[in-house]
Amino acid sequence: MFERNISTDDLLSAIRAGKILESYSDDEPCPSLLMLGFIGDHVYHVVLGICDDHLRVITAYVPDDEHWIDTRTRRKKE
Image (cartoon, rainbow, N blue to C red):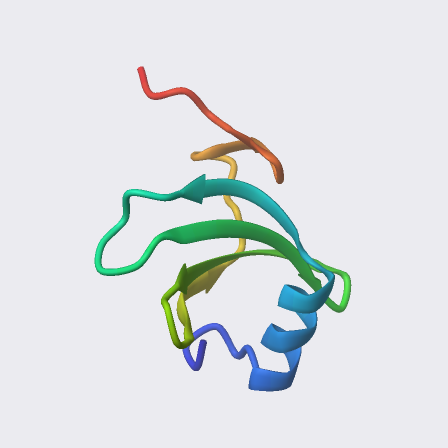
């Protein structure tokens, strides 16, 4: 978050208003999910670990054209 200049308040706002894109129920040590959120006018993906007693922010990033067709659609691996 620091490297991408994302504040905690911005991240919380993106999560609160975000939409779940993918869910990874088999992830360890906690299930996780990928969310689409906005910080200002910028689109971000936020990966969260959903642990029994807490929520863990794994990463937040701007989706790129190499991995995403659009902000919601992952490119298929060739």
